[in-house]
Image (cartoon, rainbow, N blue to C red; front, side, top):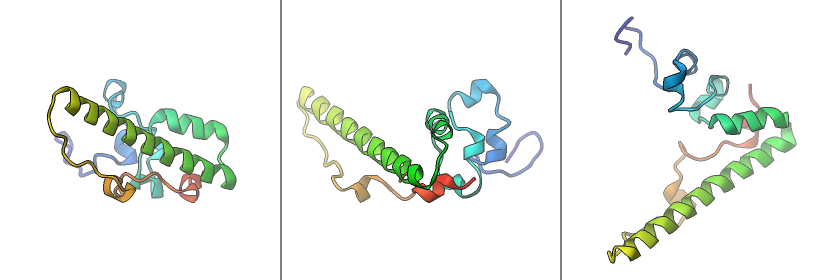
Length: 121
């Protein structure tokens, strides 16, 4: 709820993201144009949406972009897991179990969008 005007709005809505001052938007770099409609269920980093805009997403490239996003998320997870295990080894502490299956570490809220979802404007 806005303390100035009293309006209710979700913190990740397109209309709110579009009015954030640049020094605030810097901490959540999402292009508001890519945050509305069915895309409101996921937010992509501005660098990703700039690339997608340049690709002129078509039905074929939408699926490719979705696969690349999924691969990037999986690679990020693998990198985090490797850092965690090497840190635990360096600290001589037993590591806690780390999720192994994709469904254990990627919820529907964090799962990359599908090709057709990327294409919707």
